[in-house]
Length: 440
Image 1 (cartoon, rainbow, N blue to C red):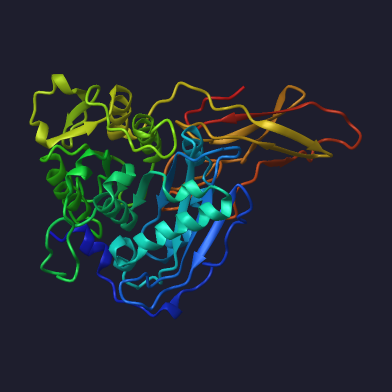
Image 2 (cartoon, rainbow, N blue to C red; image 1 turned 120 degrees about the vertical axis):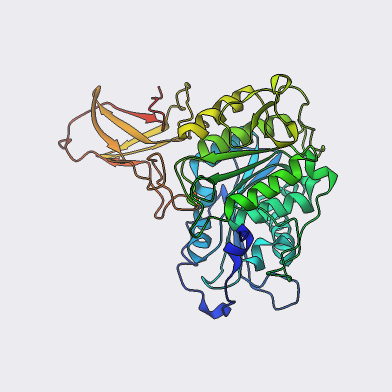
């Protein structure tokens, strides 16, 4: 069985001139957004693709405690999707809760170029990533960005990149979620030029989650992505046998697309950041607590407190606490992670003539599905009129394949075309999350 690494990177290098627009169609990066871009390097060992990094900072944050990195996957389409990663309201809610920046790279990789040249961080993307943190820190007035811990999320080749960064810099990584991609640990005779990673002891203390669709080799054993599960299983087994804090969450509905993974990934990262980030910036990461963990059998669906687990712990799925374990059990069943808390109420409602605008933050657990517009106490519209998302729960911002908002970015705006000129009305806007819960 070919590994995921082979499936992702059996591509012929293409000249850099093959890149096509809209690599240059960026959403505006006005504060609290900041952006830097670097040209391709021709020096051996350095990054051969242009890349830009967009970062969002929680408004009013005094000192950043960390940075959450949302890393897209391989291929031109996935690279373009990275342009909007920092604008995702749901991921921003996670970043704001922990005083973190939200960073989204976008590599300008032509479709047929070798993705390994960026998603293996040893090929120059590690160095450019760290340079971006320093440059964005200076640009935003937050120089601490260059030194804060990282929480990493990656899809496909981005999962390979995120896992590689854990193995290279375990003391900098608070946690990492690897969707459909993992780094290579053993030699691969089919591609001897690909360097395997060693597993330092410090990496075993970094919480990791391997997440893939069931159609990526778990229940569907053939097709383009059939090698994803064998590669993840090998990575999981190697780290868990050494005591690594690593789990597996199989999406029962998908193949390589991200589906509804964010409804487990964001709460999981929230739990890890809560446990690991220091109270004061500049202090080292805290170890994950030794008690409170839950375990489950690999490819199973029931988790129990670690003390009650009767199976082989060296092959068990590690989960950080009871809350996440219960969400994990819902996710591996049907991805229907429950939520009982309503989203935050919209703010700053403005009415100018027939145009209504407002601001809103996403619900940490379930994001934003849509807004209800009321006039004089009666509902007159929803925004959007019909939520979309071809890969999972309908969302206000919609989603692309690599879990980022579509362009043009959705606006919090409504025009009341049925209101007659000169009439006076009272308006309300209510946020609704993807679990159907309404805000005040």
